[in-house]
Amino acid sequence: MNLVIFALFSLLAASVVNSSTIVNSVYPWLILPSTPELPQPQTGKYASINNIQIWYNIYGPSCG
Image 1 (cartoon, rainbow, N blue to C red):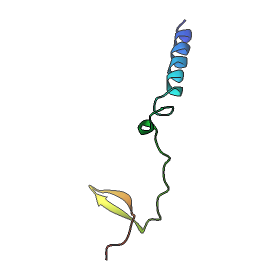
Image 2: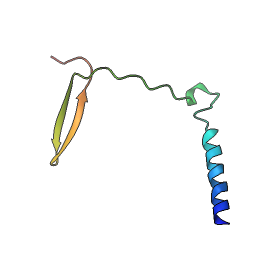
Image 3: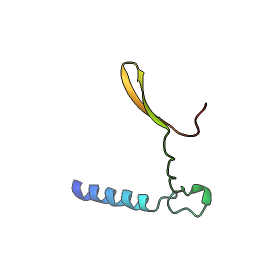
């Protein structure tokens, strides 16, 4: 019995996701644009913060 209830709730959740307003919206401000490609980074470096190494990239024109 619990398996049947679980299956019904899973089916309900899947149908809600498929009819999401963000994906199938008639309003243009609710539709997400495609992700643009990033430009080539100038440099990739590591920053030491609290004894950990965090990697980051710098994009855009160089500043002198």
